[in-house]
Image (cartoon, rainbow, N blue to C red; front, side, top):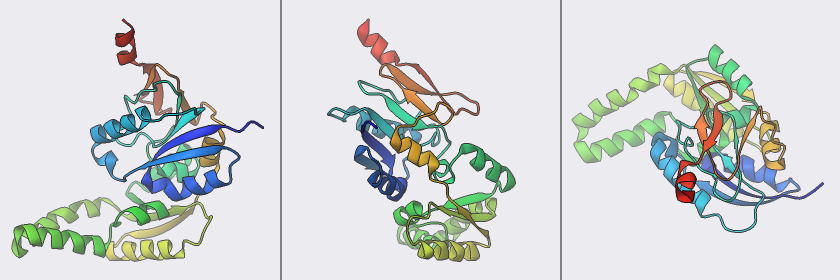
Length: 247
């Protein structure tokens, strides 16, 4: 079987999973992990992701994009001289669950779910008492004790929109500490705790170059990613900037 050379640009929350399954792949990879949280400001995610794509130099068979739709942050991303490949999913949890159908089914049954995973736990302070304490200290330093208490109360309103802390991983190393942390966070926030076994097939096919059109979008040079507004998540459209340059 031929060996491919891929350049991966991904959110840092997938660094463990991507690095592990890349290490046991026949293919060759280079990596660029962008910091977590860019999806909170989609225009910043779009800008930094495009800059990372445009900076890739060398001979690669494709650039693999380790993001989902992510608050529409990847909509408008353009393929320059190398094709792009992206998973059809709303966010990175689809990679961990193995399919967007499984993600949708779980969401329909548990609409108030906040997801925990090793990569998320590694990267950010997840919802729980430690996070609330940190936010309070930051507010207290800036605004004083009384205002900090009020702002923290406002901050906690979103917590009541969730009912479940769902932990998922792909099972390739000992994550008991992550599970225990998730359980404790659920207890502190008065959420239910659930644990799901991850499915690595979607990630494995992504890294191996097995890109069936049902699960992956391939964006050829001169095209850009657009939202499809249906179960496919993504589609391709012409890169208007390239067309303008040609004219």
